[in-house]
Image (cartoon, rainbow, N blue to C red; front, side):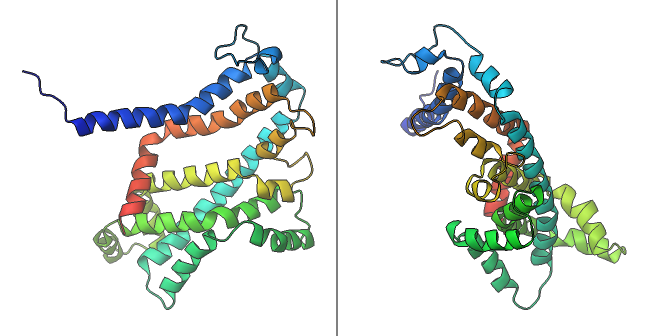
Length: 277
C-alpha cells in the first residue's frame, strides 16, 4: 500500500526545481557560449547547443591575453588576504567569545556596523592612505584593503561559533594547567572546523570576486585581478563575448571546486554560526 505524499512536499520539490533551474541556467549558458564559434554567438534566434564546438575562445584567453597573469594575481591576493584574515579573526573572535571586558558589546556592534558601510565612502580615504604609504599597485596594498572588506564579518561568524562550544571543556583544561593559546589551538579550533571552513569560503570568495577595490588600487597589469581583467574584453563599440565567457569559466572553476570539496562543512558551519550564540 503506497502512501501519497502531502501536497506541501510536492510543492516544495517543484519550487526547489524551479529555483535550481533559474540558478544553474546562467552558468550553463556561459559554459555553452564559451565553446561556440563567433558567428553562433551573434546568431538570431540564438542557438542553445553549438553546432560546432570550438576551443578558440579558450586559446585566445590563455595564450593571447593577460588572463593567466591576472589569475595568478587573484590567487596570491585572495590566499594572502584569507590567511591573514583567518588568523586575526580567530584571535579576535575568541577574545570576544570568552573574555569579559568593558566596552565588549559596543566593540562587537561596531564590527558589524563597519561591514554595513558603503564601499564608496571608504575608497577615497583608503586611496590617500595607500598612496602615502606607497602601496598602490602592490599585492600588500590590495591584501590590506581586502582585510578591511572581509575581516569584520569573519570575526562575527567565529564569535557565534566559539560561543556554541561548551565552556566546561576549556575550564577542565585550565584546571590541568593549559594556557589560553594551548586551549585555542588544541581544543577550540579542532571543534570549530566547520565554522572555520565557512569563514574561509566566505573570505576567499569575497576577495576573489571583488571588483571595485581592485579597479581603483590596481591599475598596473602586474597586480590586476581577474574581475578587472574581464572588463578589458569590453571596448567602447565591441565586446568579445566569446572571450568573456571563456574567461568567466576560468574564473568560476576554482570557486566551484572549492565549494564542492567542502560543501558539507560549509553548510553546517554557516548554520551553526547563524543560529548558536
